[in-house]
Length: 106
Image 1 (spheres, rainbow, N blue to C red):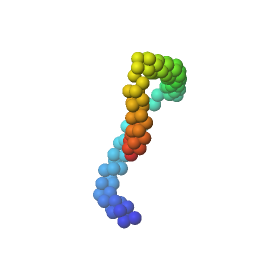
Image 2 (tube, rainbow, N blue to C red):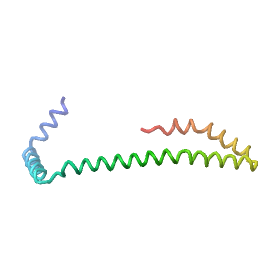
Image 3 (cartoon, rainbow, N blue to C red):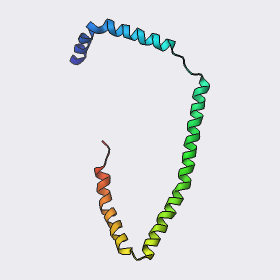
Image 4 (cartoon, one colour):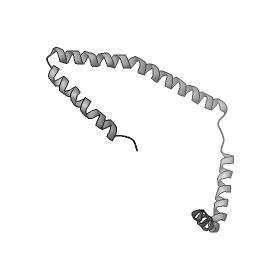
């Protein structure tokens, strides 16, 4: 409460300038033209189309990436890299929880 009263008292000297600025901004906004409703409807439709395309692309790319990943693992296992793969996965399994815990957003 004390800070609010101090703030109100500090604003008193510049109140006329702030009111004049407010009137100036209102006048500028009154002269600016607003696009028609069809513009905003078209914008929403374009956004929905883009979102739909991205969803379809993600749906199609996920199995492709998964199959390529599994094919790569199969190739490495066929070439005798079982021990390095196990060590790599053990390292990921050990360190990933710490990465997830330490990388929490603020």
